[in-house]
Image (tube, rainbow, N blue to C red; front, side, top):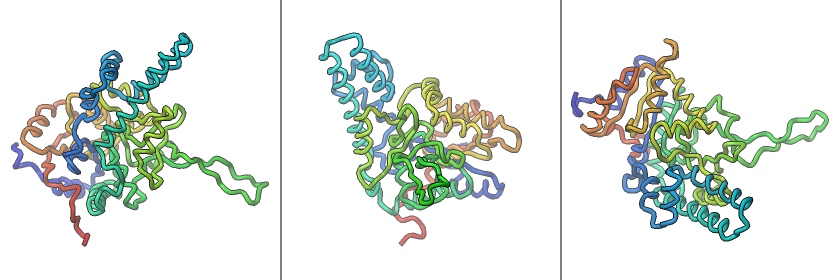
Length: 354
């Protein structure tokens, strides 16, 4: 099979609709690159680490031997606490704390260069077009999985009204109704806490996302309050709260990271349990993505009526197609490549819009 002979996106969708097959969507970095390839690139945070001009941070990354920002910041935070116990040298602890703050600020600066800084920077017609693409899954009891840590998916879903896009977060009731208090009024948590709506969840950030934070007790989502969301994220980081996202590492390291976080584990297990068919867009199934293939294979091993039958992998060129042909044997279910150029997610003038 050559690239020109690949089925189109609409043909894939129509075939699945004719079979009455449930369909799910897996998004990779190509989803963000299709919005603006000039500001989104693969392994952007990893490249930032490698290219930082801060010699101390470079040495720190080398010693800790990881590109996981969350792990590095946690290590520094723990080191400060240990140093205060074993040393009275305030200069040492101050140096560690200052290094931690520099890393936090550099991370946010890097993210700001990669993302639109506000939800309304995304043109309305592009937001509507993207949501129409997503809603073909969400409105048909399908799930949307994303391996991206950026804010694009979050912003599109927030800006377009839907009852089907449920990310599992909500405000917790802080006071129970009291029959002896006739004027009882409910009080809810300030934070959006994950767990309350997870049974209805349809949006899954497999590698975390910038608005998601692990407080040590709860997984919370930063509330968009009309201000700049990236600034709110920075405020949380200044309080030693770190975004939950898997930024780098091989497949084994990524899976270890996932399994040490309750939210990420839940999302991964949901991928392992999907039925019907999975369509991928912008996800390369590279050498560090075997944990995703393993999840797909687990879904295929489910009982006949709950099984994942097929995976449709979007490819952009002949090289992508050749890669899919090489890795087909890793999959237990049927694999069909399709021409990813035949769907324009971020159309400037989506159908039906004036």
